[in-house]
Amino acid sequence: MNKQNGFTLVEMAVVLAIVGLLLGGTLIPLSARIENRRVEETRQALDEIREALVGFAVVNGRLPCPAPAATATGTVGAGLEPAPVLAGGCANTAGVLPWATLGVGETDAWGNRYTYRVAPEFARTVPQTAFSGPTCPPPANPQLAAFALCSQGNMTILNTKSGNALSRLVPAVIVSHGRNGNSAYTPQGTQRASGADADELENRLTAGGTATANSNFVSKTPTATFDDLIAWISPNILFNRMVSAQKLP
Picture 1 (tube, rainbow, N blue to C red):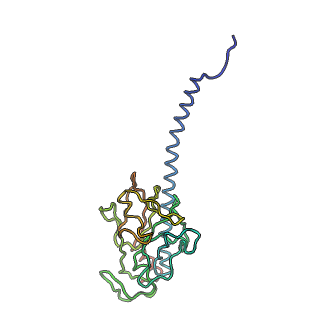
Picture 2 (cartoon, one colour):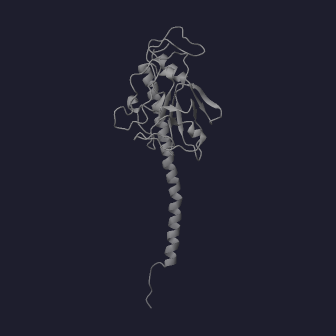
Picture 3 (cartoon, rainbow, N blue to C red):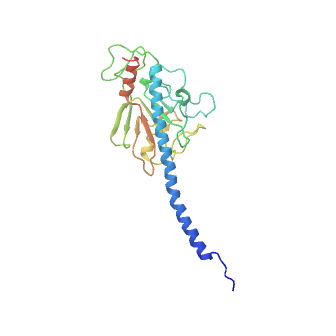
């Protein structure tokens, strides 16, 4: 009798089952690594955006106004702060990041635009004569800046919608809406659907992309339903850089 070499069907099935288990075990860590990389890329982009905003203020004496959220990429005005800037602040205090004005990337690692809001007192025309705050008016009105060392932002960063404050009197906030992209504006100028997470809803644009629900934003550890990434301008860092550039006091 001739002896035949090879695998039986049972042996092949066992091998295929083992290979499938091995592949399945590597796919999950790979997807997690890709997601972690996107998070890290977006965090780095937010750091660069924050530096770009402070740099803009040093050069222009004010923070930029938001770009129109509903304007599609490639059309007139996309990514640019609207002109003219008003004596009382921007026409819309919220919108998307003016990426073209700042010279930074338009979208986060998931392909969505950054939400951006600025306090009116920090985005006015230069110079100004009216200032608010507990210690204002300043001893002398700044001639090279829209705001003074006593100026205060109007936004608060919370650790949950009704939780503790992480930062108060913030001049500007930038939001990446994370992997799920809930409420984010796309390069086509359309807004993605909102989720049901109450904390994420605090970070969304309203009124056709021209406002936010209120002046509160939430920054916290990601959960199954919350993955927004938040960055904000520290008033103390902004003032320090303006003083160093001799734009203040």
